Amino acid sequence: MITREPRGTQPPAPRPTPAWQQALASAIRDPEILLRRLGLAPDAVPGMQEADRLFRTRVPESYLARMQPGDPRDPLLLQALPRGEETHEQPGFVSDPVGDHDALAAPGLVHKYHGRVLLLTTGACAIHCRYCFRREFDYADHSPARDDWDAALAYIAGHQEIREVILSGGDPLALGDHRLARLAERLADIPHLQRLRIHTRLPVILPERVDAALLGWLGQGRLQHIMVLHANHPREFAAPADQALRRLAAAGVTLLNQAVLLAGINDDADTLAELQETGFHLGVLPYYLHQLDRTRGTAHFEVSAHRARALYRELHARLPGYLVPRLAREIPGEPGKTLLAPFPARE
Ligand code: SF4
Image (cartoon, rainbow, N blue to C red):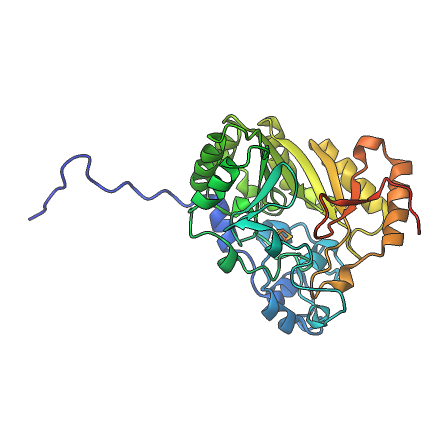
C-alpha cells in the first residue's frame, strides 16, 4: 500500500545544481592533464608533482580556454601551474606574510584596519593561484562552523565604527547564493554598516558564476555592493569573462580590480597598461597593483621594489590618472596598505 504524506509536509525539492557549480566540479586537478591539454609535454616542468602536493592544481575549463596552446610561458598558465621552485625555502618568505592570524577578532573575522573588517567565508577557490598569500592559511582552524556567523556578526554589531564588511576567503563566490544572500541580509540588519565589499576572482576565472541568482541578491538590499576583482593579465578579461563583467556593471555593482605584480606574467608596462584599459572598457576601475606578499614558495614571482616603481612611473606617463592603480604592499601591523607610489621614490 502506498502511504501518501499529508499535503504540505513533503520535504522541499532539492535545488538544481547551478551550471557554475558543475563547471567548478569539473575543473582540471592534475597538472599533467593541464599540460597535455595545451599540447605541452607532461614532464616538462621539474618538481611539478612535489609542488602540486603542497597546493593542489585547480583550473576551470573556461580559464584553460583563454591560455595559448603550445606556449609554456603563457601568462595564464604560469599563474596556475605548479613548479619545483615552490618547494624551495627562501629567507623572508613565510606562511602568513600579512599577519592574518594575529588579527583574528572572532572565528573567521579579521579586523586590521579602521572602519572595515574581513570575513573569511570559505577556503574554496575556483583556481589555485600559485602565488596566493593564503595558500597555507588554516581555514579549518580559523573559520566558524558552517554558516555560524553569530560571533562575527556580534563583534561587528558591537563596533559602531565599522562601516564596511569585506567578504573574502578563499573566494566568497565559491559559496552558493542562498547562503550568501542570507549572510548579506544579516549584515544589512546591522544599522551602522554601509557597504558590503566582495573580494573575488570568480567572475574572471569562472564567468558562469555570474548568473541570475547572483545578480538577484547583488542587485537588492540596503548596503552598497562593491566587487573587487582580481585579474593580473588583460587576457583574463577576454570572453566569456567580458560578458560576466558587463552584467555585473549593468546590475549596478561597483567594480574594481586589484592585480599582483608577478615576474614573467605582468611585469612590463605594455601588459599593465592594457590590463587597465581592457578592464575600464568593461566597467572595471583599477584599484591596487600589489607587490607580492612574501609567502613561502612564491619567491620566483617577486618583482623588486625598484622595478615596480619604474613600471609605475611608466604607467603614470602613459595613462590618465584614473587608470593608474595604486602601487602598494601589505605590511603586518600597519594601519592600511603601504603605498610605494605615487609617493616620491627614495631609493
Ligand atoms: S583566487 Fe585568491 S584566494 Fe584563491 S588561490 Fe587565487 S589568489 Fe588565493
